[in-house]
Image (cartoon, rainbow, N blue to C red; front, side, top):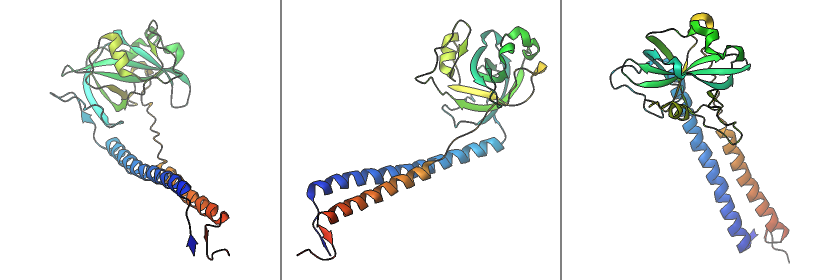
Length: 241
C-alpha cells in the first residue's frame, strides 16, 4: 500500500476534521449537562416545595428553572401587568403578573395564570383579587427576554410580549428577590380567574443526534479525502507503473 498525501489538502482536512470532532465532543458534553438539568428538574417537581418566606431565604438566582417553591405573602394588585401568551390549549390571551410581598419582606413576581381577552380588565374578576395574606405555590421560571421580532412593550396598557421580570420590576420600581418569576400552580382562585397551572415543560434534548451528525461528517470528510487521493494516484494498494 502506498500513500503520498498532498500537503495543502492534508493540512486543510486536518483542521476541518479537528473542528468536526470538537463539535461532536462539545455536543456530548452538552448532553451530559442537559441530562443533569432534566434530572434536577424532575427531582424538584416531585419534591416538597422549597419555602421562600423564612428569614433570609431568597432564591439563589438564577436558580434551576422549574424549582418548586411556596411562600406566604400579599399581592400588590395595583401593579398588575399582563404577558401576552396562551393557555395550555393554545388559546390566546394573557398571563396576569403581580408583585407578591412575602411575610419576610422579599418581593417576587408571580404569574397567577391565564385570562382570556375579555377578562383582562381586573373589574371583570374582582373575586380573584382576594385581600390579605395568601399562600402561593408554583414553579420558578427564568426570563426569556425579547427576541428580534418581539413587539415593544405597551406601557400604557401594561402589556409585555416576553417573560422579562427585570423589565417589569424596573417599570414599577420594584426590587426583586429573584430575577425571574414564579408560575402559580393550579390551585383555583376565587371566581375561577386567573387560571393557574399553565406551566408547560418542554426542554428538548437533541444533543446525542447532533453529536452523531458531527462525527459522521468527520468520517465523511476522511472518505472524501481518501477518494481524492485515490483519484490522483496518491493512494492505493499497488503503485501505478
